[in-house]
Length: 229
Image (tube, rainbow, N blue to C red; front, side, top):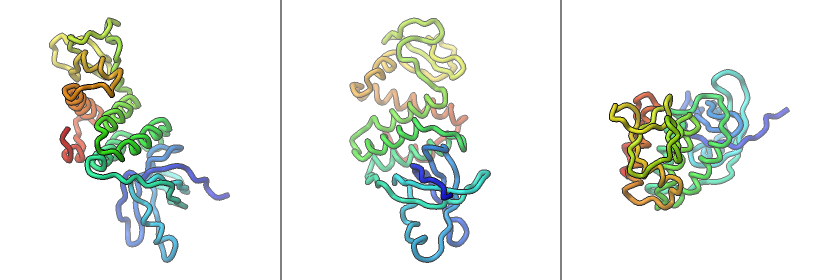
């Protein structure tokens, strides 16, 4: 029986030996996996061109262990990303590469990534990437409570300062300096992110950078250097 096709995106591709590619793929059914794509003459070589990031593919693979063998791939859609949209998409791919564990299905995150690529086709959409980052962080357990602090259950106050730690959640800032700082006004604004003003979007950018650095154990994303928001 032939392996079934499944929706996938390629996050990264690298040359492998003489005629092959090593692919890091984000799949709807199996999560993040690594595949070797082998090519010869004819159709195999022609299909090599579709194995690139920012193309929605249907693919199948065979094998066991950490590295699979790509069996078939068909292109379903290209995302014509340009300028800032392309830079943000490169960043999103690196975030997925760094943050996802191998072989752990994340179908909801897969759908959110696909929707993010749709939004990034509009380079003026400045919220597409931050909202995806929040989804990515939530998947990892980094969830900002937008309505109550997690320590006392008090309503979020716009004039209050808070801090967030994965093991404590959100709590009022008592000046101890631990955790990620976040303002009450930002938490309230995130209830309707489309209405955020430039100052709140800037604070969100700084907050996300802190949270992602915490998630990645202090490591930074190379693609973060490419954009300034």
